[in-house]
Image (cartoon, rainbow, N blue to C red; front, side, top):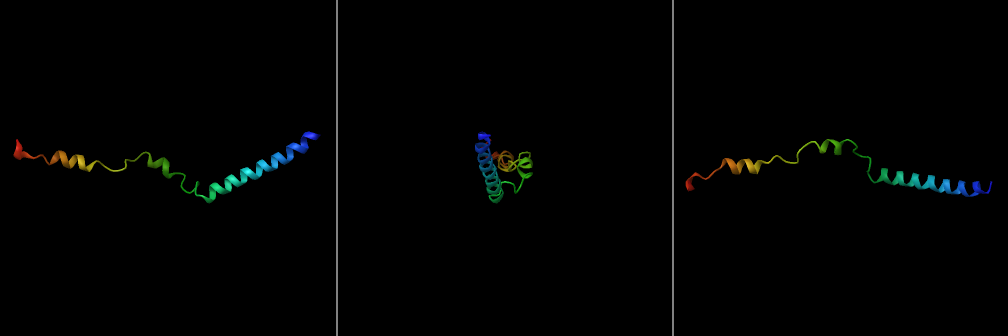
Length: 63
């Protein structure tokens, strides 16, 4: 019976800590975009346009 006097306050503090952590994560924007980062991995950042322009514009004067 004495252990309940210890476990109940510890569990209440734990519940309030978890609730505060969840509240903080929602307020800070952790759950704003759940699907975007998963799709962002699949696409390239930018197409390599500079490399294709440099290879197509060969200076023929030096040959």
